[in-house]
Image (cartoon, rainbow, N blue to C red; front, side, top):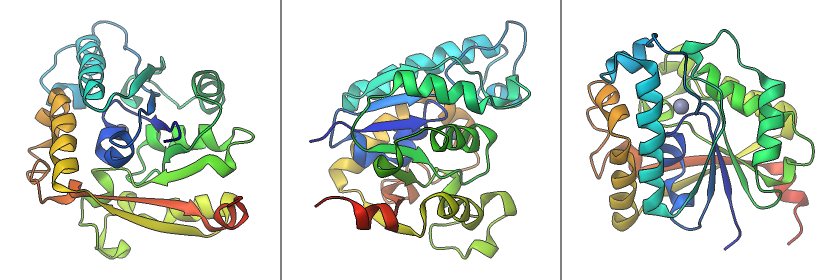
Length: 239
Ligand SMILES: [Zn+2]
């Protein structure tokens, strides 16, 4: 199986969104916002996850990532940017350079669509899109759990504005033409492994479960994974 690379804005994004990739290959997961903030501050999210210091949250989350990736055999690469709450803007160009240095040069490259409109997801996407010679490697994954927060099959207009899929798919279509959707349903065995990986991100579960009580249900929304490829790139890809 060809080596695959997943660009994850945060430590848990690859596990949530593309477990089927992690479970079929020894992927490289490049986590963009893996840096620690300055001492003495804590974001609202880290506080919801039970922390009084962002530094402690960052250290725990890096450890949880390694634990989760032991299950799939994925290689973890941690870049130094902090979460959005600890910065003012997303440094697209600097991140693109960091990614170019950190990523394997070949094989499928999975990047977030940006559903949920989180600045770290949109920024990570834009950083990859700014790189040369990656177009025919790209697969675009639905950012979970934001993508399924209103149900996988909801009409886009029934989702709150920053969770709508179409504006982000339109952005990708400008760069790469029509987007072809693909849906993956995990097997019982894959789902059990996915939930083991998700549970390894214990700090994030503390923050998320109150909002997503169905998250760890074996028949819940995480059973489905959705991604897109470019119709143009697929048509031009050598057989
Ligand atoms: Zn994220």
